Image (tube, rainbow, N blue to C red; front, side, top):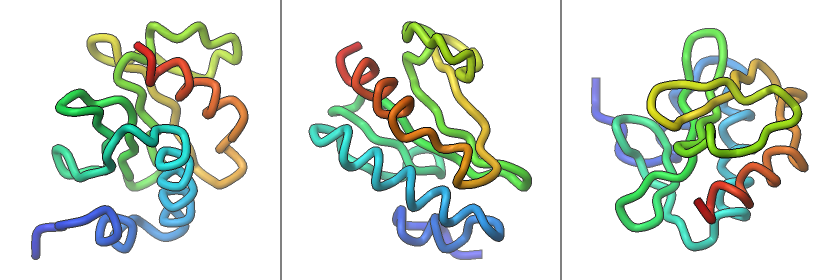
Length: 114
């Protein structure tokens, strides 16, 4: 299998139905993190400020994970962000309805300043 070389190629390889989630997340990340560059990092899309990851997403067989590297430092009153390793937090998405644009925008506004 050929190595995926771009976010566009990554979106094309996402499981059925999840490419739309990835495309919407990409648009949100591009809009909310203008100082960051979207790139493949460890095989999935991540928005980096310099060499520091801020946010990204990764497709699995049954969901897409939206990740915030310093997400545990965000006061998430919704309870949707789940802690991961180090300071990372994430939320699992199974459909477009799981993307709460105002909430995710709020998270990204905080994350870009951490």
